[in-house]
Amino acid sequence: WLKPFWIKSNFGSSWPVAAVSFLNLSLMLFALLASAVLVKAKLTVHIVPHTHDDVGWLKTVDEYYSGSNNSIQHAAVRNILDSVIRSLEINPERKFTYVEMAFFDRWWRELDTTRKDVVRRLVASGQFQFVNGGWCMHDEAATHYVDMVDQTTLGHRILLEEFGVVPSVGWQIDPFGHSTTQAALLSADVGFDSLFFGRIDYQDRDVRRKEKRAEFIWRASPSLGPDAQVFSGLTGEYGGNYGPPTGFNWHNDAEPVEDDERLSTYNLPSRVGDFIARATEQANMTRGEHIMWTMGSDFNYDRAETWFINLDRLIKAVNEDGRMVARYSSPIEYVAAKRLEDIEWPIKTSQEGDDFFPYADGPHQFWTGYFTSRPALKDQVRQMSARHNAIRQVQAFAGYKNFSAVGAVTQLLQLEEALSVAQHHDAVSGTAKQHVAFDYAKRLADGGAAADEVLWAGLSTIAGAGRWRSCPRLNETVCEETQRGTTTMSVWNQLGQSRNERISFPVVSRDVQVSLASGSNLAVQVYEAPETITNYERSTKEASLVASFVAPLPPVSLT
View 1 (tube, helix red, strand yellow):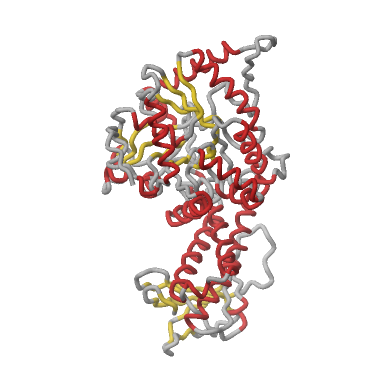
View 2 (cartoon, rainbow, N blue to C red):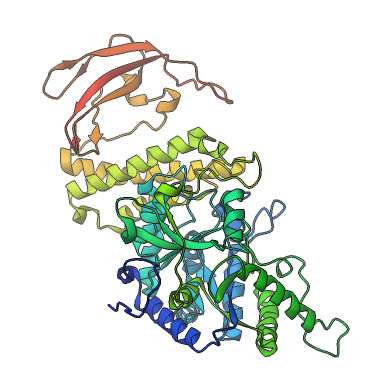
């Protein structure tokens, strides 16, 4: 691995190449060399075509992919990816950046060998690049760090297996505030050398724009210091968004760039003038001779050629004008260019305010309700996450060779994908539409049921064959096994320490006795089941009584 000694800026204590693929490294070096020949006095505008594809929000993840339910929102990610690939084939100078692997994986599985080879060539050439690379763009407030790591790993694993690529840029452009965990653990510690985002408090944003601190070094961990710092920057026009500059959004109604002087709509000089004005305004809010234009937004590029035709003409015209340099680029290449500049960046430390929470986009407009909204869904995510971790431990104890069958892998993958989708910043956050929230919950329930088959197989290996079952409806005071009479219950402790855990289950009688395998009895309390607060009719299977006892559990054990 290479460590470029010529870099003098304070991006970090060292170049985190351990998580950068040879492809990304070569792209960076190419960008450095390309930037070196630019005239220093000129501002270079890095044009970064991209789309932001929510893994569920107003529509479900599958509706967004296929284009269903367009009466709610016109969006079809399958069409976006098809359209982008066709446009990249037309012109080798064009580039595109993609993020959400939940969609890309669906699309990739549909391609035949010929089309897959085309995509691989575009990835290898640097025309089609990946940033972030997780299954989704996870929330940073309502998520648990284990789930953040897992969903990132799931996406990165596919990129590594299919393309030999490991993303090197963090891209959290839409979540509603940003945590030190994201900057340290999920950026610097996973090998990202940069982290970009769109939303920060409006007052902080305005100060940063005024003081040329829209890009900075974020030293998020007081204990790790420079070893966990990451170059960070706002996206869009540093105005709290991640879209193109005003007047250049060709997904909507931006004026086309017309370069044919024979037409009455010829407007090349004015469009170049607009470009120069917008770029100059943005450059005055940061440092150095390079800025990035995020050319795209939510579910853009389903008509990719409309974008690329305008961008082709605009880039050519700006470069012929000579006052600035415009080029197709990517976040990876942009960061490489910024590295080449010998700039002392402002540093944000944990002592300076810690993170970018809470997020407010105006006076008294704090985005904090989602910290607690849809608590049942938040609880279900945590419960399924705990089950997922338990299954992985059981697999390790039982021996992974016993789970090598395709069926077991597929069953656990269903839960992994459901959990990964649920980390999306409109999922566990509780900010999606009702039918979308139902879809998240159903995916988790179905994934948990499929993964249970893997769990039962593992427990049978560890504790002997038997009829293993779980009680997924305990929140409704329903468990057929404990409501029948005598039953055997096993409890798995995931923690590496002893614990005393209260276990509750529904019963039909007050005459209840709980015994350990050793024969000793435990104290048990039986009480009336509380009334269920629900919009639905009470289940006829609900028990009227609940029994509770405290189970003494050894570290990482089955009791």
